[in-house]
Each structure stands twice: as structure tokens, then as C-alpha cells.
Length: 476
Ligand SMILES: [Zn+2]
Figure 1 (tube, protein in one colour):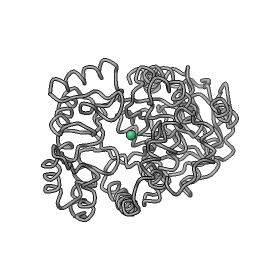
Figure 2 (cartoon, rainbow, N blue to C red):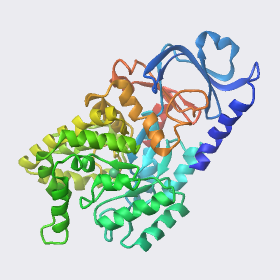
Figure 3 (tube, rainbow, N blue to C red):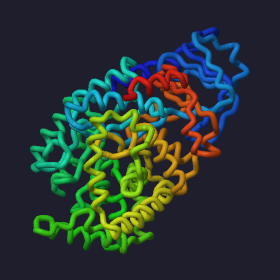
Figure 4 (cartoon, rainbow, N blue to C red):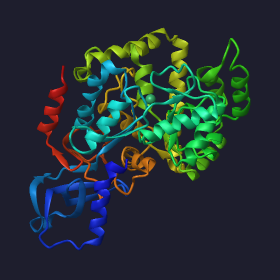
């Protein structure tokens, strides 16, 4: 992360310590733009943006454009500029035979205005680390990557590449290995991990100053994890569990049955949790999580997509043209699972998802750091890199967030989780030049995020035809 930030940081320091020369020359000047100032939710009309290297150096009245000199001038023609989008939950994975197929997903993100991704664990870590460096230094067209490296889980975990931990010593070794590869955060999965090992990871990671997020075994309560300093929770299952008036007794039941022939686990517990949802407890929990600066990644779109697989013909999806057949082959597992689901189970899933969605604006209003994440990547059928974060943002808006709040989840709040909000997430002088030019005003209609005119990533300008060329280069 230090490498990625160094240039922005350096330029940021320069801008505050050296007076601006009168006729300074910028690399890129964008004029006649309406800037969406995400932190305030305001539209700043008729602006110019002056960019040097990968940093926004000035945001000014466009009528002063003549006083700005630049190598390249782009007339935005009254279009709308938002910060580059952050997809806070993606995966690059599928084994060594899919490395090239995964690499081709990177331009796809960029073509949809995604300039940063948080990669939440996989099994091709050395390649991801290389791409992290190459997208940061401009060698490779793709988003900036923050990555956990391998997930931590129990022994014989379901996801390939996970590091198994049981004892406190295992946790120490696992965290050592993540720090050796400069992992950006710790991602815990819950297929086989014990509650004790889970809490131990959080304790040790926090001592080292590492960020921790992930799933959570149902033998643990979210408040215990948050009290130890856990930074975030992926998906809605764990926060939903903590909203039950019977959280204690259900957790005990899960614990009692953990090592029996009939373990209860997450999905077994959901109907009881749904039936005992307590809005007063939920409100208290959200205030607590907000005070802890806790982050939740709702991942609404993947839930909707997987729930709808049985009724949806995806075979004509145009985006399949950009998903390598090797990645498409990994879709089979979730399709089989969806087709096996009974009508009764599906009806429950729909009810449960509606209840989860209804919590989003309440958490947001309480001050929980909500981030947009798609969970796209191999195995996660029909959740396409790039377009899926647009769909997630639209669902977050449909849940009750304003367009500006929905944009906040996909810009400012992602940067906040990574602790880099001084450099990313909004279009202010000193921030990194990651931005998306839209045809229409997203504050009026969030669907405007689909009509992208151009993208600036890392200070590099991509016109619509450049973005189309990126897409053509990965089409199969
Ligand atoms: Zn995931």
C-alpha cells in the first residue's frame, strides 16, 4: 500500500509546501465539467480539473481555463464527473490455469469506471501481488488493487489457497506470512474455522495494526468481534444474526450442535433469526458499530443474482463475451446449487434478502460505514466485474439511500475502510486523479452511472474509444 500511495503523498506534500508557479503546466486539464462532490452531495457546476501525474492539483471555475496550461485539454461539454468507483469485494481466483483469464478481468473493471478494487482472497496470490504493483505503476490497465492475499480459515477449508489456523501459534504464523507478502488486510472465511481461532486472529491482527474483515462462524457473536477491534463484516448474515432477540440462545444451539451429526450452522439458523428479528436491538447494534467505525459490505446484487439463477436465462448475457471460458466453467457449482433449491427455501431466501436490504438505510443513517461490494469473480456466477458494482450501487439506492449516499458507499467509504481517505474517494485538490465522466447527472438518477464517456485512472485518460478498445482486447 505504501508504494501505491507514495506518489500521491509526495505530490500532496508538495502542493502544500510550494507556492503554485503562475504559469505552471499540467498534464491534463478537463474543462466544462459538472463535478459531483460526493462528501457534500453537491453538484459543483462549470468547473475545471487540473491534473498532474496521478494527482488532482486544482478544481476551479472553468472560466479561468485560459490561465491553466496543460499538455492535454479535454472539454467535458457540461458532463458530470464522479470519483472513480471502488468495488470493495471482488475475487481473483480459480487456480493457476485461470491466471491469464483472471488478468483479463482487470480492463473490464476499468471500462466500467472501477478504478479501485478490494480483492477478498483467493488462490493465485503471487499473480495478484504482481498485478497490484503493475496497475499501481501504470504498466497494466486495471484498477488499483488492495488484496488480503489468502483467506484464513480452519483445516480443510472449502476455498482453495486458504491458510488453515487452529492454535494461537498457527494464527501467529499465518499473520507473519501475510505481512511478509504485504497483504493489505486480513480476510477470514468461516467454512471450518473455530470460534476460538477466529477471535484469536482478530486479537493478534489488531496488535499488529492489520485490518480485519470477513465472514464469521455462527458460534461467535458480532459484538464480540467488534469489541476486539474487527474492522468489518462481509455480507448481511452476521449483522442480521446480531439483530435477533434470541441471539444468545441461537448461538448456544449452534455451538452445542457444532460437532454432532446434525450441525446447525449458518443456513440452519436463519429461519429462527428471521423470526426473532428485534428492531430495538438492531438500532442499538448499529449505534455500537458506528461508534466502532465498523464497515459492512452488504453485497445485495450477488444475493439477488444467485437467487434468480433458476428463473433467468443468462446464456445471452452480452458480458459473457468478456468472461474467459475458463472462468465461465467455474459457474457450474452455484448453478447446480440454485437448481437444487426447493421452492420453499427460495421463498424464504427472498423474504430474508428483503429484510437484509431494509437494514441498509438504517445502518447508514446510524453511521455504520457501508461499502459497495459485488463479490464478482470466478465461481460467483453471472456477477460480472465492473457492471456488477453498478448494479450493487443501484440496489443500495433502491434500498433507501439517496443517489449521493449510494455513491458514497462506492467511493469515500471504501477509501475510509482502507485508511486512505486523504488520497482517494473525492475530487478535491491533492486527491488521486481517479474519476469517471458520465453523460447524465447521477444525483438526479443513479442509473446515470451506466453511461460512461471517459475514465481517468491514475491520471491516465481513457476516452470512450479507449475503453471500447480495452473491451475489444479481452473479447473472446
Ligand atoms: Zn467473497
